Amino acid sequence: QVQLVQSGGGSVQAGGSLRLSCEVSGRTFSGYGMGWFRAAPGKERECIAAISRSHNSTYYADDVKGRFAISRDNAKNTVYLQMNRLNPDDMAVYYCAASPLPGWGTHRYEYDYWGRGTQVAVSS
Figure 1 (cartoon, rainbow, N blue to C red):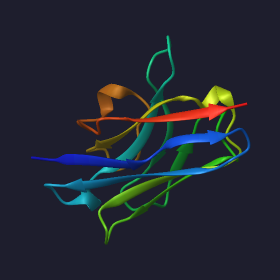
Figure 2 (figure 1 turned 90 degrees about the vertical axis):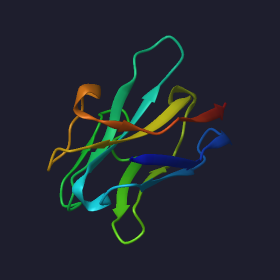
Figure 3 (figure 1 turned 60 degrees about the vertical axis):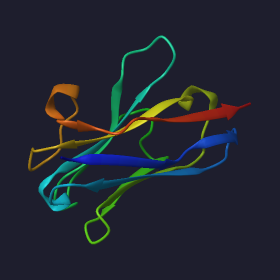
């Protein structure tokens, strides 16, 4: 059974940085495209970043492009989300997810496995 264990997150002041990690166990990590989603209060869960199996292709939502960076370490079975220049609009619960797609997907139905989520709070 595939498990995704998230770490990182927490509270930060506007302009600060946080790094989220997501370790995958149970299957070959390199066989999954990985994504980061977030759900802000009252909003749908949306994909903000994704990375292909071989990490040679990435996707970023427009509102995080240039501030967030997704990366993966296949030797550590871990995907990361580095978040810089955080602002209150970034406040949400963040989820990592694993997809069988060779590339990356931006829709929830393209992902088979999910982490439990981690809260990110940004104060102004």
